[in-house]
Length: 101
Figure 1 (spheres, one colour):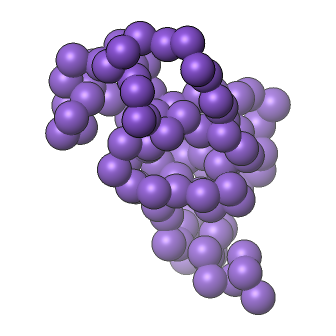
Figure 2 (figure 1 turned 180 degrees about the horizontal axis):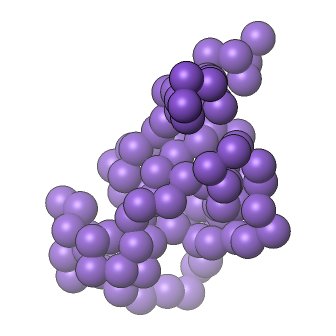
């Protein structure tokens, strides 16, 4: 899994029929210190309901297709969780509640 920040949405009117109704998010990857990396990825959010500026966990490859409802979709990445907090060596790296004060 990888940590990422939701930067926006991707809209596509012409796509594989199995992707109809699937929310596509533009994600910016985050390192272990909480720094934004210059890498972006598009991931499907079929069940979590993440929004812009939230930090999420993404799953890739065949694991992305293990999410209920994604088994037959041509996905390479899926949002599987919205992150509440991240602690590394007793340091708070990220807190969702602190982002919205």
